[in-house]
Image (cartoon, rainbow, N blue to C red; front, side, top):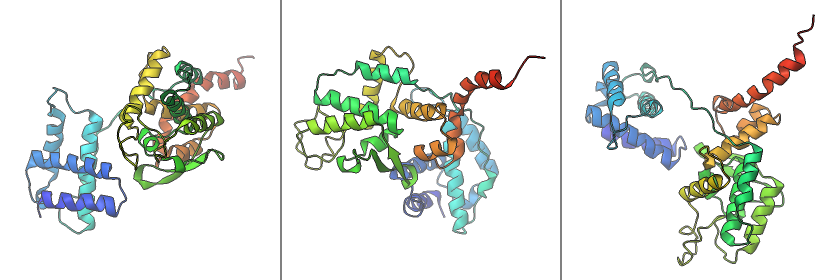
Length: 305
C-alpha cells in the first residue's frame, strides 16, 4: 500500500479514534507529506532504517524559502509524526518498519520567560481606565490570562455562557479534547463583569473585535477576537509598561504557573491546572525554586562550629 492513501487513513484515525484536534491532525499530515516529498509516494513496506537515516540527514539540511534551516524541535515533530504513522500501521498489521526503530534527536528546552507579579501589575496600569468597551475588554483579557493560565486558543474559544462569574470557575476543553476546571481571581471576575455589563450586543463570544462592528453576524463568529489579535494587544501593553522582554499570551500562562509554584503550590496541582498530560512538561517551571535555594541553605546549613 502506498504512503499517500494511508496518510489519509491515519489522519482520520487520529481525529476519530484518538480524539486529536483537527489542527494536530493537519500538522501530522503536513509532516508526513514532507516525508513523501523526500522519498516519493513509496509503498510503506519499503520504509527502512536506512531510508529514515537519510531522511533525518535531509531534514537537517532543508532550507525554507526564507533561507532558514529547520529547528531541531521541528525536525523532531517530523520524526514523531512518522513514528506515530508506523505505530498505526503496526496496529493494522500492515508490514513496514517497526516504530521503535526511530530515535528522536535530543532537544534542549528554551528557558521559560515569565513575568513577576509586579510586572503584570505594571501592564494592567497602562490599560486606559476610560470606560470604553475595547479597553474594558483588554483589561478583562489580561486579568483572565494571568489568573487562569489559559492557552490563547482556549481563551478565544470562550463564549459568555461558558463562565460562571459568581463562582469564579468554569470548564475548558484543551489539547487532546480534555476537559479541565479553570478558576479565576476576584479581579478577573470583576473585570469580566464590568466588560460584559457594558456590552449592548447579544453575541455569544466572550471577547469581540471592535474593528468589525459593521459585520452582521448573529453567531458572532466573524466578530470573535482571534489569537493573533490577542498576541498583538498583549505585546502592545507590555511595551507601554516598559517591559523589554518578549511578552506573549503564553508568557502570561508561564507567569501563572510560576506564580503558583513560587507561592507554594505543588507541581501535580499545577499540572492539572495547566492541562498538561505529562508531568515532565510541567517540570520546566521548577526553575523558579532556584530562587528559594539560598534561603533554604541559610536556614538549614549552619557554618558554626
